[in-house]
Image 1 (cartoon, rainbow, N blue to C red):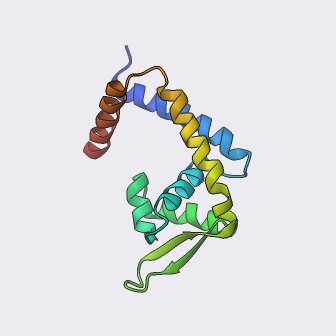
Image 2: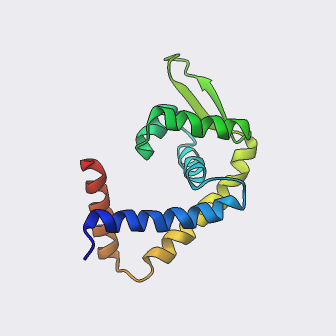
Length: 137
């Protein structure tokens, strides 16, 4: 029997393959889609590069590379924070904003398909377990 870590890794790979396949239709990666969704969900707040690093639990260098590629494709804009020049503020460009409904619809549909066979209690427990596992590591 596979250990929990292997099962989580296998599930992660399956989900990543699905999202990357969908994202490729728009010239995106799954991570770029997730970043677009994250920024869109925080539309009325300033989103810093640091917030993206924290949300996705990725290194600064990885985040910089992702954002540089998105900026090059004119999906986002980056600017220095007015209160802390060391911080970069990330916003969706008009071109990136056009993708928000597509990205969010895909995510909603994908979640619905994944969770269709589970009760609300099971879904809530699963979410709690994932949050706890994420905090521990």
